[in-house]
Amino acid sequence: MASKTTNPFTFLQQVRSETAKVTWPSRRETMISVAMVVAFAIIASIFFFAADQVMALAVELILGIGR
Image 1: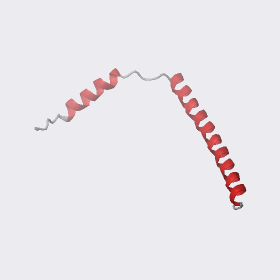
Image 2 (image 1 turned 90 degrees about the horizontal axis):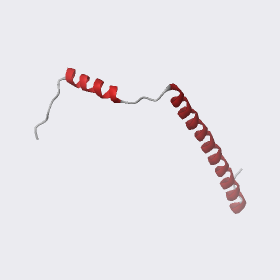
Image 3 (image 1 turned 90 degrees about the vertical axis):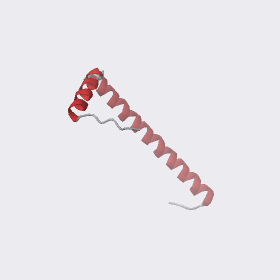
Image 4 (image 1 turned 120 degrees about the vertical axis):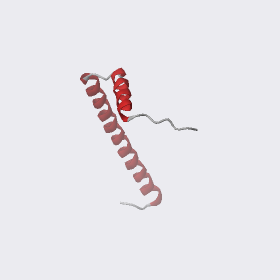
């Protein structure tokens, strides 16, 4: 197979034209998405902390070791 090389100037023109086609989110949409990610990260951390505490208690009760 023959490799096809593109001149850097042409490449940058193509990148710029493709970037112009992108529909970028508004500031409001971005802030809502960030808030959702942070909220779900907090919820997940609380869940995993609680699950860890329950498992630690179960191991302590069953094996009599820990803490």
